[in-house]
Length: 351
Image (cartoon, rainbow, N blue to C red; front, top):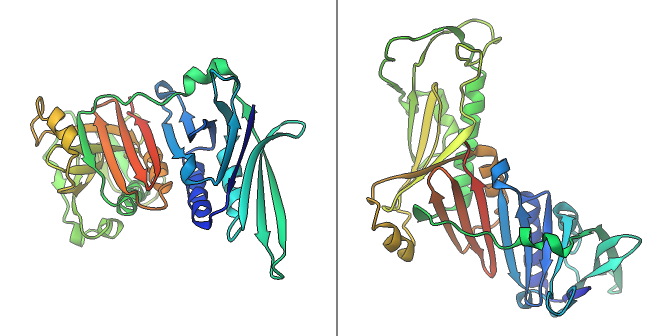
């Protein structure tokens, strides 16, 4: 089992460094799969356990000027190793303005992915910096758990807006939730009769307006499910009759075949929605999905807002193409293309 490769082009080295930084933000530990024509970074957490899955693929010929590998056998010409993504990212960050970078599998009392960086000093002489990244070789019997995830049939597929804007929106939604957690309330018994109509706040005059980004259509609704009275101290937050906090910890993603995408947080206390209009739908997906679904009908999935923010934080550069596939009440699948690097990211629905 052997692997060695070299990057001599500065643009390819910078691109590979960006990919490693993206992977490090998405996964603490991941699997690196090495094949004759591709590299894959894989995260295969169990969806049943609430974990996310990731599949990132790089064509080796677009990055490496030299590439040699021998798998475990001729029939299984592949190598699977587990590594800490942050270790690889830190090693590659030291390769800025490097003349060349070499990476190979070594055995230095334990398996390593050795990264050798050729740097140019002020006197034009070169010096080598070497990083030995510990890895764990994954046995062949476990390979079946690390294959490309099957993409389920989506109820709605929609193009994504600019991810930087979406990240700003979701961060501010999370801040609204945190801000409301500090609002003191005294809780009396739950309302037995049907609750009154929801109260629609005028955002321009609301202190929460500053937490929302400009340029979007927002709505803020307070649902008075419980009788709440302000108290002078901050000893209590928004609790229900059982003393359980009812402020939002999740995010609802809604999409339809008219190109509308909604991001929403809601609870018995508050509902905040941001609307993205006219994003468009992939042509093939629209044709397949429109047979059984009205264009206005929303498909929705409720996900952990922290996992969604982690995905958005990993996207340092807006992708060439981004598609969101919503499987109602089961999962959301993001399919991104960064130049010649493809990324698939799966977030399971909250139960």
